[in-house]
Amino acid sequence: MTSDVIRKTVGDWVYRHLVNFKHQPDDDVIEPFAKALLIAAKGDRVLSQAERDWVIGLTAAKGGSEQLIEELKNYSADEDIEQVISNHPFSNQGRRALIYTAIQACAADSEYNEGEKVSVRKIAAKLEISEDVVKQIEDLCQEEKTQLIKRVKLLYPDGHPMLVEDNGK
Amino acid sequence: MTSDVIRKTVGDWVYRHLVNFKHQPDDDVIEPFAKALLIAAKGDRVLSQAERDWVIGLTAAKGGSEQLIEELKNYSADEDIEQVISNHPFSNQGRRALIYTAIQACAADSEYNEGEKVSVRKIAAKLEISEDVVKQIEDLCQEEKTQLIKRVKLLYPDGHPMLVEDNGK
Image (cartoon, rainbow over all chains, first blue to last red; front, side, top):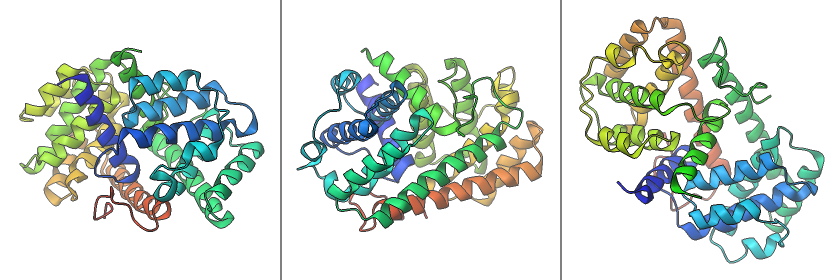
């Protein structure tokens, strides 16, 4: 089993786990999605290392190429988001997934702040996603954060040396 | 960036996402955990390909070695689970996580059936996990399955060609 086959095995599992997809989609959807996430996370003018690392980790987990991963490590995230996301299949069917994942990227450094909320709304407006839907997606992200805390408490009632100290709070 | 570094990047991201760990644990925890999952999934005497694939995908995502992935593809899952899980760190602190993940592995072919419930309870008894806690973990798994369905409905209101047809129901 080559490492490429393993990366594909991982990508398939991750897509099934996250959004119940049959398998990972084409590589060329992963790149603009990842760049859009970094632009969104920089919407408050600060792209923290935690945010960048989170996007890189997700992109690698989804099966993004080594070349793309390298590029993302130094990507300035200053491009116009409209140019990045236009003409890609996800810009229609994946619009809401982009907003959902962008919110998680913004929260990767423990806070999804006011500047980021404004930035997410600007991107949502460009994608013609209503404020009501943005709020529903924000609520979903909050529920899932709560679910993670609940899961960790149930599975590790006495804690675990590997746990992030704040347990995602 | 070598493929080993990428596998580590993915493993770290996956552990953070799933159980809020700082990074992936040592390789030697991943192997007995994966084998125990396959034994659990075979508890109803049938280890379906979907169950095996799910465990292999998870193990690859967590950073399991190529050698281990190869081994799991043909692992008979007939070993005594007590021997597999004894003397490993997770047998204490990771006991509940094993039951939680075993239930998901059993459900990977769309059903977590009565035979599998019995099997999970046998393993839980060996790990000194009470029936009450097993039920709490089963409820958690059900909640998370419901959460996945909700997430997919919100993110893909018009469906998506990549979606598994039953959407996890």
